[in-house]
Length: 379
Image 1 (cartoon, helix red, strand yellow):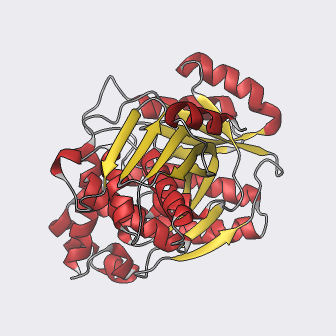
Image 2 (cartoon, helix red, strand yellow; image 1 turned 135 degrees about the vertical axis):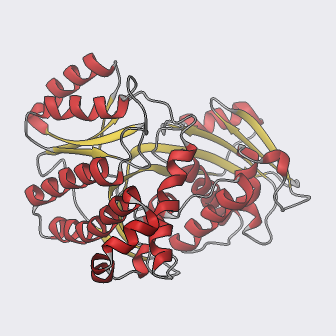
C-alpha cells in the first residue's frame, strides 16, 4: 500500500479507491500577458500535489490536507457562500458545482507546492479536485474545460479575480504555449528537457511577503486597460502596436507615463514569447536564454513589477535577482516570475555550476532558497 493510501486509511478508516497527482506550475515566458489575452509559455515542475480518494456514499465531501486539516462540505447547496470566501471549502464547493450527478467523497491531500509561493498551489488544488470528481463520477472533460472550471471556482467561489494561465498549466502538464486571444485558449505542447541541454531550472525564493501588495498587482491590469480603452478596446491584444506608436503622445497624455511603459512591455513580451516557443522547438537554447534575460529586464524596467513603488530599504526581490545574476557569472539566465514585487524568481543554471550556485545563493538568501526542479511530462 502506498504512503498516501496508508494515510487515507488512518484518517478515514477505510481504503482509498484511487490516487491522483497534479503539479505546481512555473511561468517560463509571458509576464503579465495573460490578462491582456496575450501569449504565455508555462510548465509544470516536479513539485507534486497528491491525493487518495474514494466515494463515501453520503452528501458530504471530506478533504484532509496535511498542514491545513479537515474540511467538510455538505452538498445541500452548490452556490457561493460568503462565509467560505478565501477558504479551502470554497474551492471544493466551487469545483463540485461545475459537475452534475456528483456525490460525497473522502480525499487525503499532500502537497510539495509551497503555499503562497507563486507556484499556483490554489490552481493545483482546484485541478486536483476536478480530476478526482471526473474520475470517481465518470464525468471526464478535456484539460481546457477542467482549467476553466477551476478558474470559475477561484473567481466566483474563492473570490480571487485570477486569470486562466495557472489552471491551464496545471491541467495540461509539461510545457505548453497558450494563446489567450480566443475565448477558448489555443494550446500548443512543446517537448523540451532543459536538464538534457545542460541547464537546471531553479525556482528561487526571495523571502519577501506578498501581503499588502494587492494594490500593486491591481494597478498593472488597470493601467493597461486604460491604454487599450483609449483605442476603444478591452485589452492590449486588440490594439494595433503601430497605431499605439503613431499616437504615443496622445496616449501618454491620456494614460500616463507608467501605463505607456507597461504597455510597451506587453507588446514586446508577446512577440518575445512567440520567438521563445520557436527557439525551443528548434533547440536554440542560447537564443532562448538570451530572451529570458530580456524578458526579465523588460519586467524590471518597463512593467516595473520588481520593486514596489516607494520601497527603499526593503527591495528583497531585486536583491535576489542581483544575487542570482552575480553567482551565474554571466552564464544561464534569470527573470522575475509571476506577479512580481515579492516572492519567486527563476534561473537557468548550468548543470556543472549547480552545486556551487546553490551553496552561494543559499548562503546569501537563506538555506533552502534555491529549489532545483525539472519539467514534468504530460498529464
